[in-house]
Length: 235
Image (cartoon, rainbow, N blue to C red; front, top):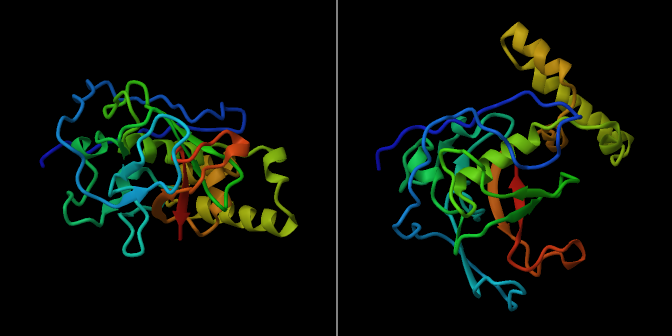
């Protein structure tokens, strides 16, 4: 389906910025209408126990977000904006467009989801992004991709870095140096260097997005119920 290429705005980030996953966009376009057609078929996530909230016993995850045993849904280095990615699924355009990122991330739609990752000490909360071109009353594909990118762009405080042992801190520091040195433009390279270590550096060389999958049973000790928390897979 034809559509405009979506733009995920980037803004400078520092350790003193808010740690909220909510972000501000520079786009002034009017948001698209809520999609009325059913979400395309994709991997079905079966819940093995009754959900403790209001979700039904079955959740359908959008194919562009779903981790599978085959090819990753997107070719995306998460240190770069999501619009730099290429879509691997033949049923979608090769690039992200507004009609795709406006689709619900889950079916039924959810007002909030939490994402965790083995390599990150933070829980990433995804909610509808205010004023975005893909905005909706539920979490959309665009919300997930944009929130992942913006959250991983946040600066890291000394206290956050100290959760790692000495070897881990060296790996993160090396990833930071490699990240800013690969910037071709000297001015932009100096800008990246000045912003110091970011959350994306905790992934080291595991920046490729492989999708997300359900955390069976949730994490009740952290208030994350079954069906509301997902794992980010990277490579």
